Image (cartoon, rainbow, N blue to C red):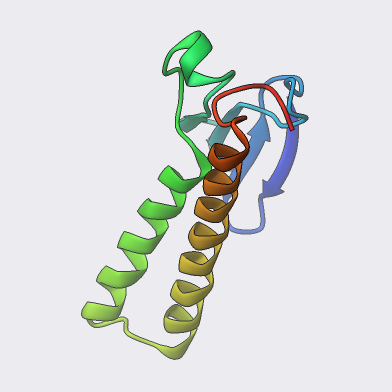
Length: 115
């Protein structure tokens, strides 16, 4: 386990596994710093869905949650410039990842452990 983020805001985000074939980690935990209690976990897809089946979420899935939350804040009493700009950046991140997927499909390597 390696702490990668947090503690200043009361949450410890930790990597829970070794790097996979693509060089990224797949399992993370979220722990309350004060009481040391696990309250959440994120499991990313480990291996191509076509080869190993659906085993976790994609980056875009988590970004979709963040987009929804920011849009809700912007529609509610917490509308602010910071949320507006953050929302734009997160949407741009999704666009970039979707472009990467489109490029991989075009090259015939989407769903494979190939560059």
